[in-house]
Length: 207
Figure 1 (cartoon, one colour):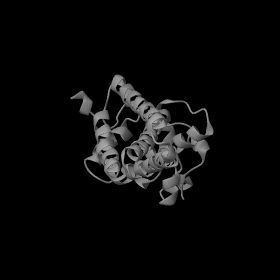
Figure 2 (figure 1 turned 135 degrees about the vertical axis):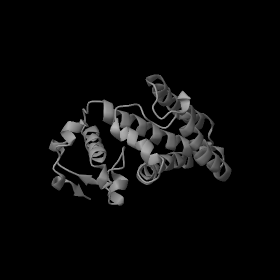
Figure 3 (figure 1 turned 90 degrees about the vertical axis):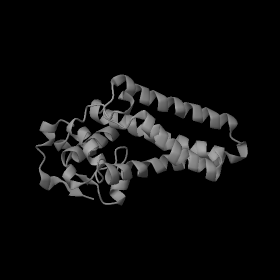
């Protein structure tokens, strides 16, 4: 069934981004209009917690699931072999996991407003990750931040035996856990395998 395939059509790919964009907008409006004014600071704090939480989830999923456990290793290898293919977790799967593992526990433990705020933050992080990952593989980098992200992700794709650069939106957790490495940016200007394969491995430095 197409909805459960790892490789999706352009239409379903756009639906995924559109759906999470709409959810982000709806939750934002819902919290702005409905959340008790005396809880606004807590609401903002939970949104920020969700955003921060996504960064560690992104890192942990990539490092300890997609590169460490079968059958996820095999599935993720499809993306490494064909980085421009539209391979990603089906929307129904990601939405179900967010609802079951984030929203419902937060609802039971903290109530509706905290649950909505935490979920909003996490979805914002996930949406930012999805767009960033797409930009890394499909867009021309026209700013220093995206150039740096493309550079690190290129190292990950073409030197993945070194097990590093797992963060897509940020190198923060790679630096914290010692899995960040880099080489001169002049040696990496795209994700084109033919260019990446010319790297001098001695120039790669772990941090």
